Length: 82
View 1: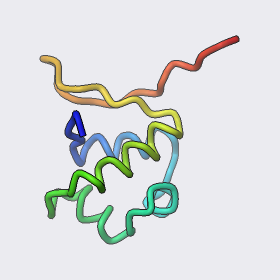
View 2 (view 1 turned 180 degrees about the horizontal axis):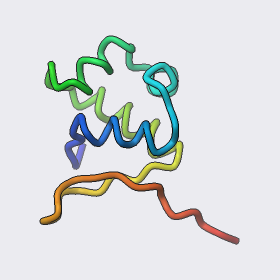
View 3 (view 1 turned 30 degrees about the vertical axis):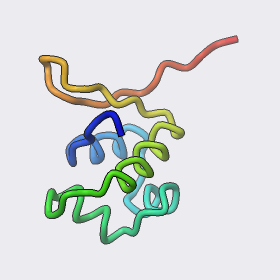
């Protein structure tokens, strides 16, 4: 995976789209227990886990912002209008 995702970003992303841990677990295939441990920085995630989480959150409309001098973050992705 080309980027790291920090626990704070996962929590913020869920808040942006009003998802519970259960919602993210269902969408990503990651267990609730693993998600709780990741969000509290109790474990270092596997790249496959990060990929599953980011794919689920991005599909729901979240955009991850890399650390670019201002720190990493999340925002709602711009919707494409037709």
